[in-house]
Image (cartoon, rainbow, N blue to C red; front, side, top):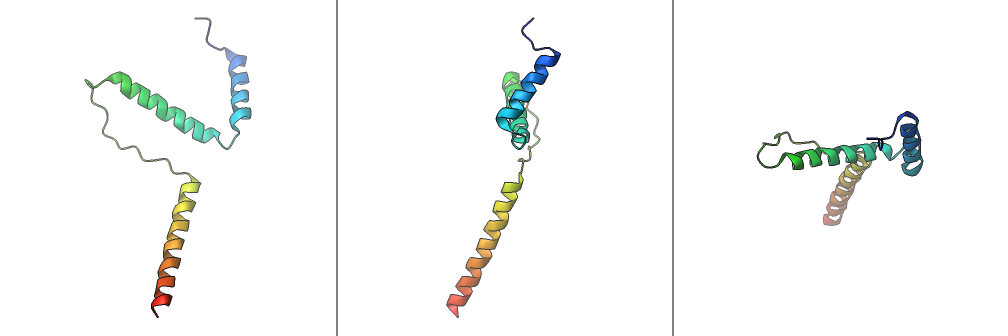
Length: 87
């Protein structure tokens, strides 16, 4: 089993990944890698073994929160405009 990377090889691999994806995208990359591994494990279990019923909460990043906030502001603005048009 000499194909697995050893100490300094892991460091080189991590530096290359950091350069390619950048520090801002590493959390997203890690989350998607974790979900992939989880789905792979669940798929390997088969239908014989029950899968846990825990509902995984979606990962919310700050962009999702900003989008929801802007949508709420837009809805409020539309409502105010309709009220002004009705008068």
